[in-house]
Length: 377
Image (cartoon, rainbow, N blue to C red; front, top):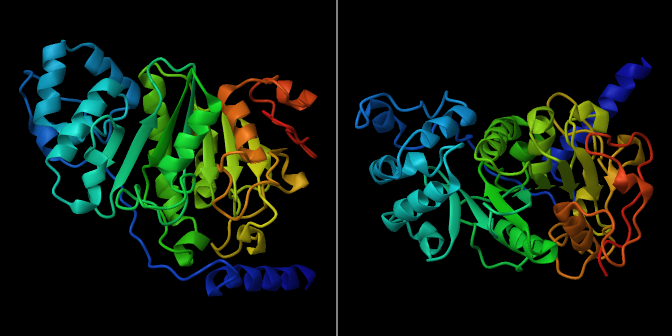
């Protein structure tokens, strides 16, 4: 009887996520964009090199990398010109080719939503115009960076809203840009909107179907970075993006998982993520996400708050952040701490570094994890 009562309470709380809690609004149901890049059928049929090309859907990023390494510069350029939408989105292909391929694809794109993405000098690592559109942009020199970070955003993000006029630190490119500026030389940051996000915060945001699809795409993207010879990244996951990261965690080749403003990661604790990465969590006192019930029942809700001491994540200070989108604001304690993680430095100037930050990768703490204080002042 007691277990039944607890289930009823959990169901009522989970239902409130959909019915509307402070800060949560209704949203339209979305169909996840999955499968290979646009133009894959033509790519598969192409025999211009006298042999078949790696299947964009089935070939592993490491296989793609080996294929491109076997080609001459002229052969790579030929494929880029014939199939820019495939090359630009093919995880494992050399990033320099992907930049050029996406610039070419964008130069012929007539949808006004994507016009700003074609501006000279932008480093677009992925671009898919289908549906609401998906995009990834690089800030910094990804090829020479000693440390790489990836920002995974939450609801209401797509290629069409990527350049929306909001606070400089609020949209995905703003988050990536301010993190790169704070982390400094030798780092690069990718703003990755490579999955179908919820619109508003309704049933899609309260369930995990879009996150499941996004987790596979994020995993393949990270594997593509590694296959291209780049460092394993630290991943910064905001809001619903932390659900994506939680589901992907056990297979993601990353050094750190940093969640901020998280509704839960679909795990009871950090150990349940089954990751070798260090796990960090931040939530500011004014974030409305704190009003969302941390339950999982009948497919609704995302589970334990990662900032709960019992979850076992390392706490990132966020007292200076304001609201759900304030974690990357310049001058905040959260951004200073993020920069420390992005640089992978344990003793930045002016930092109060707890002993826990000196633990090796893969040794995420259990129980009450200490707070990273002070970062860079």
